[in-house]
Length: 552
Image 1 (cartoon, rainbow, N blue to C red):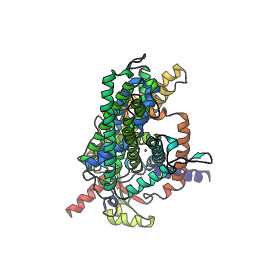
Image 2 (spheres, helix red, strand yellow):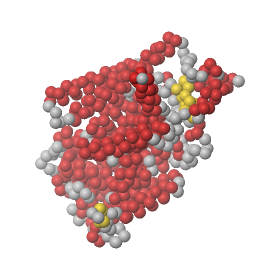
Image 3 (tube, one colour):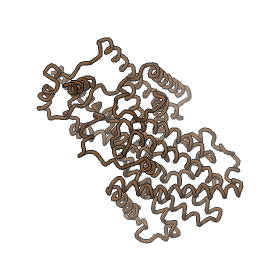
Image 4 (cartoon, one colour):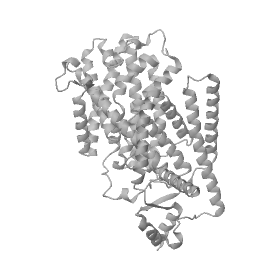
């Protein structure tokens, strides 16, 4: 009885692991059919508008004051540059996957194709929380900015006021705004992207006004904000890095571009351009705006809530406050459209990390099997026999010689273990580097062990060949991520470091949500997946069958 029980347990455990790693097919016939395909109406200009609009939200209007005052001082410009470079690493990974797999779903879709259903479920589950809270936070920021038009919070009309009910602050205008934006998005992607473009244009004009008008005042007053006792780096390098970790989240939103991939007219050409141009534009605007604001007013005198408006008001330019407020309101609206269309930051960083891992898997150990069809259990055997013959029922076989087959299997195992070791090394290294409460010696040892594991795995990946399937996986002829494996590994390291430094309280709250999602998957999701009755076959065998059909 014990052996039978152990066998059943092993079979159940193996089945559960199989559910976690089962993957979708990159070129599903269902996705290509007209009934399921979204209209392709977006151009590169629409993508840039969506990317810039979704990225430039409350961050540039709020974080400038908070970060400059408490973390970086005038060197906040350097923090925005470092954070922009870090975001660019993820953007390059996103660009390749968006070209290869131009379907809606972004990081969830890519994880499902390259890593497996379990990781994809957790990524999607965490992004649900991210987009919900992000959209609520952005919408709630509308009322304080609108209050500036009416002379303050106390002067708001009754329908815009925030009543307190049973100790809870209720924001009706935020709720109405969410419904309006949702209705706008439901009208169609072209109409919503047009509105996004108009709002983003107004927002960018407001930022350019801040740069030009602020620059004029700065040169006229000799940039008094930079004349502080601590100089340009009052908090040192640690302050700049800490500020980079904070302002990094100002770049969250460019991934909204990839969520529209299925609706782009020419995704192989336009998606990389849309991602790159929108991210570069946001980085330049962030750096210029922050440089101007901290130059107008000493960092210690900045208002953390309204740093830009208060900086102009300190020079008696109250009329400029209205222009800045219009920019802030439109930025919040644009960010809300971007948040509902596909933004707190745990989900995004997990998604960025999963995308970087997906690039490594795609280049070194892409799927060897492909999805044939999803059938009910009683039809699987008959249909497989009809298609592939009685002797091919087990769906195994390779077109390579036995020696090449063994070499390829050895290469894939080395690559798989190397990727695993790299991820483990990154986790140990980033955790030890961030754990300032443990003694120096064990912390140094852990950093050394993590660094050795990281470099060892990276060295092996550098020396072994990438898989030839990287030339045929998904749509070909698009953008390819450069400097693989170095760039994806750097992306994993940066994102993991930022994840660990989000704080214990954040992780406690997010863990409750993730555990809930895991339970939902275990008891419901995995049993109702579209891949429950999926039939797989080796990719090489599929190519043989396709060639046979063409010849016959």
